[in-house]
Image 1 (cartoon, helix red, strand yellow):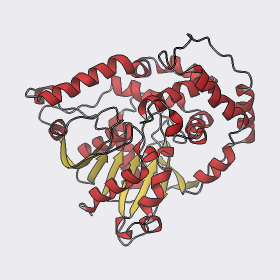
Image 2: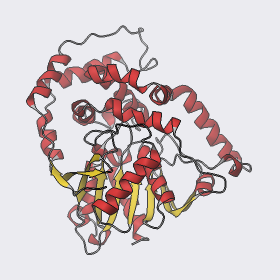
Image 3: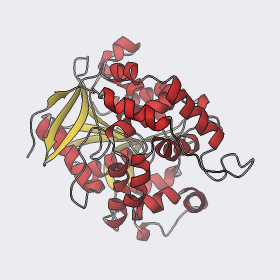
Length: 383
């Protein structure tokens, strides 16, 4: 069953902010190997800078007001109370578009692109490119209710989001876009609901062909799989623990804001195209607002369960299966998964492939202008 959307306002109690301040004033810091930089994980000198700024200068309230500029809603879908932003397109024939975030992100990946996408004329564009924009929070992330049962994997999230778009918001056809988990969920929407999904635009195409469909790989494709294997060996420890024992991790990250910041900051540094200097991509206020949304909503434990559910209840393409809905893929140089074009064509009905000059894993936040223009360009062909 699905309920009618109800307006929602982000309004954090003063007591929660006071509690956070007290916790930041009594940090128990670990030791660190001298001159180890980021080799062992989040660098202590940098994290101390972040925490000092957080404690003495960061003010949540202006960011809360800025986020509330958008139209937030909640609606019950199959017993879960889902949060989403819904902005009606300012144009003659806006295209419904669901824009899906990843981890360690949230709907806060998209504030820089929401305005240009739903109201392009107000941002120097053409009103013919407008979208009815829906930006949901994945169940268990930030303001969306966490599932109380096992099995909230990618197919189930896609089912809930399809219900949100059709049963709650009344769209008979729509498009989907996103990065990280948003790419995978968009891909699943296209695979499971091709009669409703007009096209998808993804920046991390992490859906792979069935093994039987990878017997004639090119040298370029084999090199890509080799790079992915190396990345998993050296950078994917977070996937292993979040995919096997997330609850154990959740106690510390839920109880300690500095522990949470240390866990997330390392990913923003490693996954953005910042050349090792986070301040090149994120201001301290931006970085802390990402972290605050996790802290204030208490969602870190439920957010990482998507790794467990997807490992234990995986979705993968079967033999000779592919995604036939028109697809656009953007290849940002700092992205984690960058398959060659031929590999993508084994999985997707690839209609647009853009090699971007700059940007990383959070493209809508890092390079909003490039992201917006590529989204507009692709969906012009499907209106």
